Structure formats: C-alpha cells, structure tokens
Image 1: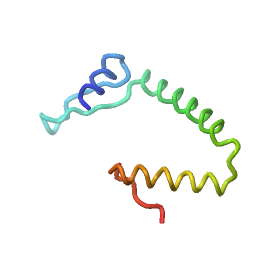
Image 2 (image 1 turned 30 degrees about the vertical axis):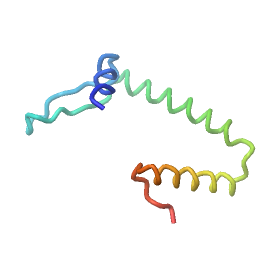
Image 3 (image 1 turned 90 degrees about the vertical axis):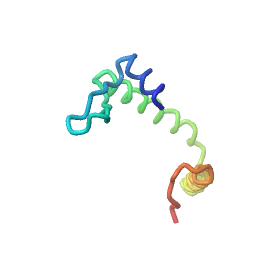
Length: 83
C-alpha cells in the first residue's frame, strides 16, 4: 500500500502531511490534479459500465450485482450481504 501511495504522491495526485495531533500519522488527501483525474476516471468507468450492461434487463443486472458481491465477499473483501 505504501508503494501505491508513494507512486500517487510522486505523480502529484495525492499529498501527505503529518497529523498535528499524532506524530506517527501521515494524512493523505487528493490534490486538485488527483481530484480531476478521479473525476475523469469515474466518467470513463460510467461509460464502460453502461456499454457492458446495455443488453441486460434490470433483473439481470440485479442478479449480476448480487453474484459479483458474493464473489467479492467470498474473497474476503469485507462486503456485506445485500439480503
């Protein structure tokens, strides 16, 4: 995780600052550039998702979501059951 954060920081997407109350804590926050990159990626993901699901009826989309959540839960992703 620290390598991922360091790479994001090197690209100017996040900044890390010492916590004023806890010397060993580094707070991490998005920079303006990071927020813009996230917004652009979010829009791209929305477009891909719409294309991917275009031929699925709403009940099929719901089943797919449930199956994917189940798969993630079984891999220990900490996702709660929807039921």
